[in-house]
Image (cartoon, rainbow, N blue to C red):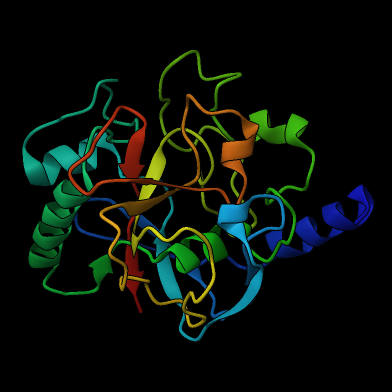
Length: 245
């Protein structure tokens, strides 16, 4: 696909009206339309095979990774190494995130806040694109969209400073890895094709997406995936939430 065609498709996606909501603690969420996409890539065994996923319901995805300010508001602590209210909260385990979600649902009087499934995450990240990154295949442009090993200066940065993807989501790549709901599987063989989380595995790992401040460009691709145990945490590991419509 030519750079000219990619640029034209990105411009068309950017013209899509961005609808957002804000909750009682100031977290912003962007409406992600239902649709179909091709998940995975042909480049790495763990991302194969490429297969079609149908997202049958619209969702609201966090505009940014959850920040330290938002975490402190609910949890009254800050486990992050790189302290700053507007930086992503990090050093939180999957189990910690479940506690945060429980408290947020209680405060908001709902049960609609949760982690995205791996397929929902990739669908929102790609934003209608089929290239390695949502801005194309050229990794030299990554610094315009993400904090990663070449420009992060060995740490996280406040959210929203880089360019968003075509659907108005920031920091989908780089800054911090983001927990997803799914258990880890070695590849996409047998994965759900309806957007639901894949949790029927004996694996003790949970999926992370997006790459972090310490990673090279390969780990920041839209299909890139990794895992940690639910109790694990490190200074490059955060999360982003979803709200069911």
